[in-house]
Image 1 (cartoon, one colour):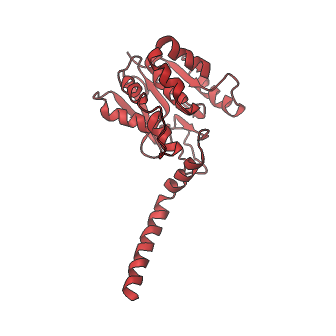
Image 2: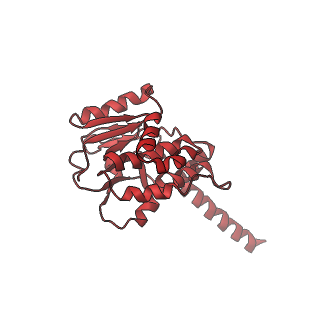
Image 3: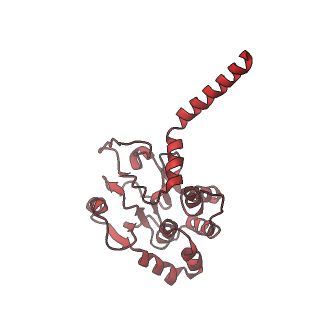
Length: 243
């Protein structure tokens, strides 16, 4: 079955922040023939209770709300199929021409990984069962693991990538970041080519904590710190020879 023409978005309640209401309308405007399904935290919990009770204990035991927001996405896409988009995603073009095949669609991230802020899928796709199984293994945060890394590996993008390596099928398609995720966290401003870009994210970072800020700082300036490290090594070697 091809990807159903359904758009899914979720937020903790029905009181959507003003900054995201305009984003929400861009999806409806560019997809007038698609069904729009909005999910609150209560709706998400009811989907698990009513259809996937075997995951309920895992779902409620996650220590961070962002994990439940991450975890529900595979269940929504498995159950209904369609396209999921974060509330900070802005839509510029209709997706009819890019989700024509049966399978799973993921987006290349600005870190050359994959992101889970925009995904599409046929219903009942077996890939999501692998993701669900992996999510059940990460309900407790190890004491040595920082907040951001735990989120990514327990329910986020690292878990998605790990599941991709296990899945044996050839029907996972990767959307190019230039057209579907052009804005990097490392850029203060983002230039959008409206003729070619389908969607972009405003990188709201609502779940970030102190460790996320530190890790992103080092990632975005990795070349600078690499050059500094090499310079210090050269300086150290020079001083050894001249002492």
